[in-house]
Length: 606
Image (cartoon, rainbow, N blue to C red; front, side):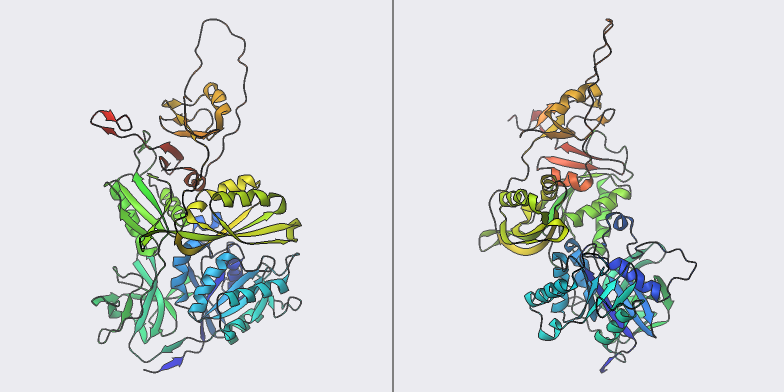
């Protein structure tokens, strides 16, 4: 069959930095194409449908929807802006013919945008730049366009790509226009630009079917749902071949076909080439495989995703409080859950550990793995995790480790503190600029080993009184940079099991900062706080006041300082090699790795 351009369909992905308002803009586009009926309750940020996404305000999984405008169907894919979820983004771009690059009217393009934009330019997609939040008082559109242009040149864009169309918009108000001063009443200028600038899909309408599966969804009734774009031919119910380059073909059956329309999946009889659709019926299909016609199946190029850079150990919980709060606690439960995650999460790798009770999970960054841990915890799993470490390669007999580029925005008075922190973690400064926005802030750019980033965010927030903004981006492998000290202080470790008492804690709090208050159950080996010096200190938090029969003066009450609240991210950043985080649906505790007993002799005594 010959290639024709399929009119009436546009496939676009939205790229933006975390919190630049892409999900809000998509909501406005949906609202204006009359998707929601007048009486339907509209949640804020509909696209962020998972609880964790709403809590953290970030998009983790890519989602599909479509809007219709003047008889054209525009398929919109909302992509994650965080570099840790880059695996999601790379696949999604394969389904598109163009992208909307969304930049904040004050901040301009940020490091995370760069990663996705580079991928889009490599695939030669048409880019439409949308300057969002144009109604912000500090908006500076000219600066933003200039920096965006510089970014395109830096990434090696061709001349046609650098001549990008620009639309100014405000997602909150749902207005857009060709100039910051000329905004229309609605988003019509944005829709028009998409139709003019983004090409129609070029596909073979009459040939044999070809469809690359780029995403997998799961439904408790329908089973596995494969999502992708039909590249050639048409897809309807029936039997097809499943092929992948370098592998044998097998046959599968499609039982139902859907397209995405205004947030629901709509069942259709057939889908023509060029449209994005989903189907059920093949229980064993995976991402990167091609569904093709049985007679002459031809595979499409498979999907390559970048390799993980950070690894963490997942272990069965062995603490004295094991099994009290979680529903799924055995290694079999954990293994099944991790295998299920691998089906959807392409950038994740799971290996077996030293024993049957441990698994090594490798991902694109700590956030990538932390999101998985948080999801498992909410599902009722109980397990423990070791500290993150980087994945080291050997090249030509040299040790190579991953490096990242970190960009820190910080008020001027704290610049010194940040420079010190980065310097101690063997970072090299690449660039330092100051600007007058927000009462004067400095932007520092560093290249440093990924090891140096582990635990950095907390220390930086402490040093800058919570004002620093840290963004990081993977920058490839480089030579091993020697030892890095990531934590100065030791821990306060409980020496007895029991309930913590105010009487004991009032003395312990003088030795450092506590993570727990009075009346909490503690066990031997649990980490109760940060010691103020290096080296660990054993403390008894369950010591009670001796009762005597002598009438004493009313006890002098020493007020306890309020304990430091540690989230899952904080705990994972805090622990070092001989410590673990115990994760249960109810609580997150830290503990020392218990010493193993070998034939009656404690290890370490030999």
